[in-house]
Image (cartoon, rainbow, N blue to C red; front, side, top):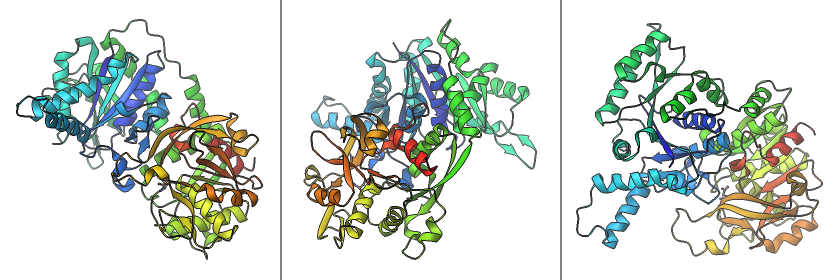
Length: 532
Ligand code: GLN
């Protein structure tokens, strides 16, 4: 039977519950336990797949094709363990299930209500991963802040689970903020006390309180929080602001968070943490020997969360190459024919981001042309690959007005076209080509050399694809397809072998890059930008 840790947040949003959950899970994993993390999100969308990145940041896609919250990306990057459909539950999914049952007549004439029907379904989902018999500990992060109307059914479910689960298998960790008031030159514990009171008013008593703070809490304040919030003194954990999110597991270890959790769960003789590789990564990351600047060209650059997995992949690949990677965010709409030197001239490499729709398309195409003609390393992901194909079609194959049917339905040369199976789809949610698909690599291609394997699996999220009718023309002119899906023959990778580094991939390699296993394509791109 798995043990459950529920992580709630108080005082304000953006305190980093996801990083706390991932860091604690990492520490427990480093002590020999099988751990996973799931996220419960209070919004009514079934998943974030239909939300604009400005609303919700990146939509993270799992191996099995779930469109999920970006926190799942942190979980995978920290733990190196895949998540799945079951690891992200939203209020929308809960209600959809309950309403479907009601329509089927499963409730046998009863009035269907938040309590017990919604909370029963929440509890069922919370325990689901435990039935897989795979995990020792399951952490559940509850989205939002305690006191929000939306998350009440989740909090109530956590309360009820206290009575359902054995005492030694249940724990609640509450993350709060202890703000520093500069005028009073003091840290203030009152918001934490109030937020715990709020949680208690729903019948939930935290076992551990983790306090985000800019300054050391000090024993006196810890004691005060312990006393007024009814927790043990050593269960008040200081979470000092860290230079990087990768420091957080080590900070929490210093506070003995893993030790306290294991004690409360009744583990004895669990091996000490093994964090050697993690520390080596941190060292390489913090003390780089070289430095490069890569331009990330996209239309959601104002919001860091929109391309979070990409930024993280550059951190992993940079550390691997002992190199600081400055990612310069460049709004694709700001690039035009006349400012290419000014916008791109100083860059060591050009990366074109994934995306949807027409906005910023021209800027991306100009940037790719610049990279191709000036032998600047180029890496394009998903839409970035599609734009590279369009650029090549227009400027090398002289196919005037070549385009993607996504942007220009009546283009005379649909070099990127909607996949056949997408043409009859009506619903937008969850209907793209999603999740991991196999890809065969062409012998001796650049992709093959980089991966060092002949068959790979990468994750997808798109409706459009390279149009194979044009393949011969592309290959005759020097852009070759080096990766194919073995079942559908869809082109997954395009490259220009004569160029210093020019690769576009239809899938999202950034979703599989982790701290201990940086992605080979990002590593090779960074290396090429270093001149290697
Ligand atoms: N809009 C493109 C498609 O649907 C690319 C999607 C993406 O970049 N994720 O095919």
